[in-house]
Image: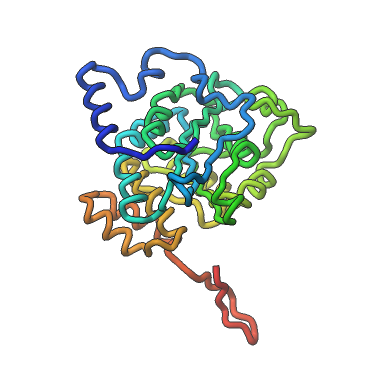
Length: 315
């Protein structure tokens, strides 16, 4: 996958057509669907692929997975309306030459009908189509955990990305949520949802270590979510991902946050340049994005100084 070119004109035409017909951008879910769309079903999938081609010789894999349970159910609708902003920043501002974006959704494998939904890596307007196929189940288990670890298992073992495999450049994975992962990847749930047959459960720490060999992984906790600012949630994710846990004041700024994070990671911009780009495009997200990304805009990490040491580690 990953062929074709994103067109804002095509996106706008599709939005106008839906408005004229009175249909939703999430027609599959809003029509009363009760199961994972076959195109997003992870069961039996060998790999979702991000590939180089003559059309896209410098592909960069970017995956965005969001919790669709409870208060997080509005996240994909926000993403869908801001897709032109995301692609505009990534491509027109040169943050990434050939971005290929995968969208997916996370639920709870202990109780939901659609605990994991995974699209394809796309370069064109099919990424909008994948968003529209997501089932916004809104379930969850009623506790402070969802199956993030199962999603990370899939991304670690069932994606193949040329940016890493050919050029040694990590892709990007953004998880947007407000709850805890389960402490282990359940082998039973892996069999049921993905179709693999692991010999044993895998600790979430181990699957994160495996995943981060090929991806820069970020967890975004937006304001307005049920557990926004929750100390337990933040501490657990920071234990897994370190500084790559972003608290976002404004859910409407999620696309801009993703784009600038990629720009920073690719050394295409510094934070001030990225915020200037937001101002130029008329975005009101600058303050929220700036606060969320302030800790990432560093090229060095200060550490306690030892005798004879500079006290600085280069990242």
